[in-house]
Length: 361
Image 1 (cartoon, one colour):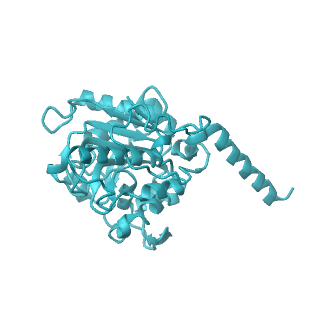
Image 2 (cartoon, helix red, strand yellow; image 1 turned 120 degrees about the horizontal axis):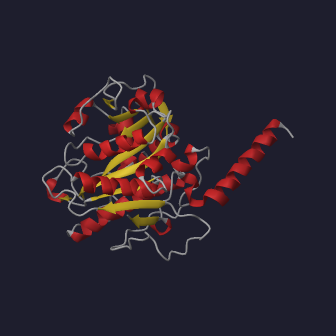
Image 3 (cartoon, rainbow, N blue to C red; image 1 turned 90 degrees about the horizontal axis):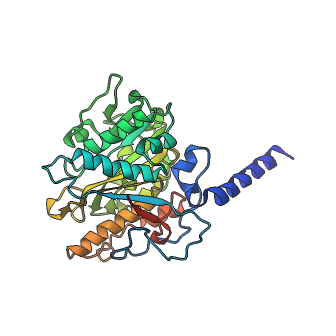
């Protein structure tokens, strides 16, 4: 047998293994972290129009999805009163919400065990936050601090954990203390430290943050639960616009040609292990900037190892809130996030709510 034939056989074995053993989890970073490649998604199933009041045990109970395919899990943790005392979240309730969501997303009993499963001690972990809207509509530093603490308990050295966003200014404006030196957790803005030569991705090209290209081996995406005036929603996938030098060039046609292809870049796709959505406060209209009129205390956190499944669930949560306050749907406003389905077609995860298991924890 020739070398080429051997490689072909090995590729086919890996494909079958993914299908039979990992099932619906084959497309997730958890599978990729331990040597399995990505596969499939919804296969064009698309994102059904979000239905009001969907059940909490599963996003699509009774859908007829094949029982042999393991549905990706999105963990949803609500804790009433987590924001009841002033602007700072209640520490105990915050830890319970984030911890239970991360643990379930990682398939373990505790967040430390889940992160130990997803990350190795020699990883350099980048926690990509979205601070452009400032305090009140950015991942809360206390929430991200919980993640950094559990990562250390899971064996990742503090020096190997980097909270990261576009600029020092935006990080500081969201309540983070920029920290570049020392042996502790670092908090770093890219500022102007991008590659000097653009690399092509999808319909365009960009210079990526050198930190992402040269240093980080694994990623946690921490987004927020918010509306976006062009893209429909800005949750996890759009957060990767903060990794390139020209996000302003990537909003045509509702950002549909751009968001999924950027997330499919090997620099992101091969490193992403976990997505967490800070929904302590959500915003259902007026985004991406902060608009207190349309903000509401969602008092919850979403987490998943499937970056597309969590996007579909977050989209539905925003639509539910829009319906509750009398707003038109995003589809009626002609800004439904069509790119979620495209992300599934690119093999990044599952977009069809009927095939996603939503678990309240």
